[in-house]
Amino acid sequence: MTRTNSKPLAEATRRRTRAAEEAVAEAITRAEKAQIPITIAAIASAAAVSTDFIYRHPVLRLRAEEVRKRSQRRPRPYATEAEDAPEAASPLVRRLMHQMKVERKKHQDEKNRLHAALEAAHGELLHLRRRLEDSEKTRRS
Image (cartoon, rainbow, N blue to C red; front, side, top):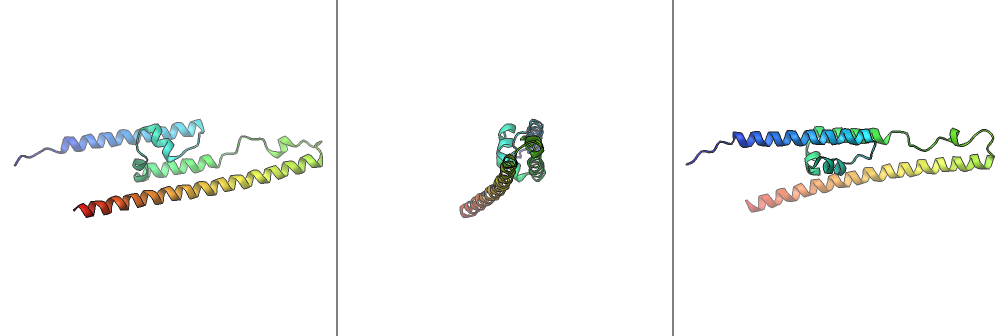
């Protein structure tokens, strides 16, 4: 029986994994500096890895989620009510601006809620895909 040396293969796998981890970390840093929306799919695309790689990597996934949460807390680029409504503005303008502020807040809250629901759905789909793969593997065995 021929004996194969799997050490070079294992080392190559470790090098590929380290390179992918570094690429993901760099993609997260670039996205954070550019202040662009951070999603697992966008990071995976920028790093040329699969989304599954990031979802299965606990450290990278946690970092991506933390950066995404921090970026969502940044103040929005639109002006504040104080900048928009000088003291001389009419009561109608102030009231309309207040209504806009309330509507903006409601829309932002709704967007955040929907984004969280979408993330949960993606996680559930990934979990179900893995269960399906596992059940197919056991059927073949």
